[in-house]
Image 1 (cartoon, rainbow, N blue to C red):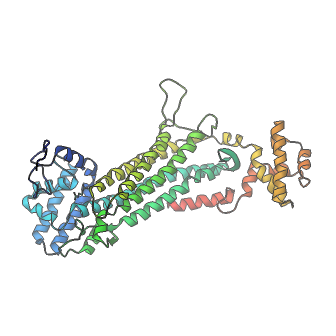
Image 2 (image 1 turned 135 degrees about the horizontal axis):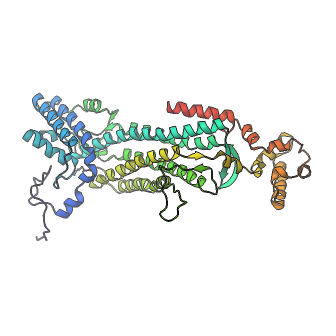
Length: 469
Ligand code: ARG
């Protein structure tokens, strides 16, 4: 049998495997296989679980207490090297290999005992879960900051009694309190935070002790590991445990959903910031100018928030596609989970503070909002007026339709039509009809829970406050 040999890799590479191989692996394989550029950041988590493993090996009678303690101290030394800025060697395949190499540097041959009964398969699954639990907490804090800005604006707009048009199909629909619109962006983020806490909870399943696939042959106390590493439960099946990336998919979905919410908020602000709308004025710190057009102030932060939603969504679909093709057990395809996970979380952590900052420095032109409230938006109120005076809704809808047609054809807005047009449209119209055409009255009438009325919005603000407290 012959085979064509391409150039091999660095013969001095520190490998966790290789005993059964007679030659070096190919440079092209090493380049493809090397994940340290992505997983380097797992080092604090890998060291934490490794220290817990050293203790578990002692309590299982595999290591003496002295060996276990020397391993722990060695791992502390490795952590200190990371904190001091040590960087990977070209031969470090992944973060686990790098830590193993540094541990050998620290304490010599004893380092080799740490890998007893464990595999990088249960190791990486555990480290990634620890990282993900941290990420959920950090994302929660960033989302809260943005919610705080939304709430502060809502409180100010409510105090001012600001009204604005609400749009359906991007057509002027009905008047609403501007605070109501602002809070319409608060509650989706609240649901995102709920999803983050669910994700953190389902991530807290400990895979350590699953070995490569069949579990560990030494009497390790997984309960002890669970307690010391802060997990809530043990994985019930080692085959499942080493390949379960549901928690990554859950966080990626949560992030993608949140990215959609941020994109929608950004889009509203961008649109309302156009000269045509003029409801929003952007500040200086989160906008850029044009090299050519001196008048420009471009909402780059918001556009990038909207745009990067595409990548966060891509990260979710990339992971789901990877998982979809796999048989049970660990497969190297899974190594790419971290690429998607880290990219999505990093992007969210760039976008969230930028959107919060850009929104914080927005000024709301409540005069422009009020000017946009045309009286045709009160058509539903006119129909309600007739219904309250005994007309059926269908009949009322037809009469108001007739008035709207007249208003459009004559170019006279609804509230400026002569009273006789109203009585011609329906006999139940009285002189108080012009009050029904006021945007403030329209908003005030909708005061049930969750609506835009003044009491309802005050209650909503109180609920938002307590959600953040
Ligand atoms: N770097 C690998 C990953 O992230 C670690 C697990 C490697 N396992 C193995 N059997 N080669 O998935």
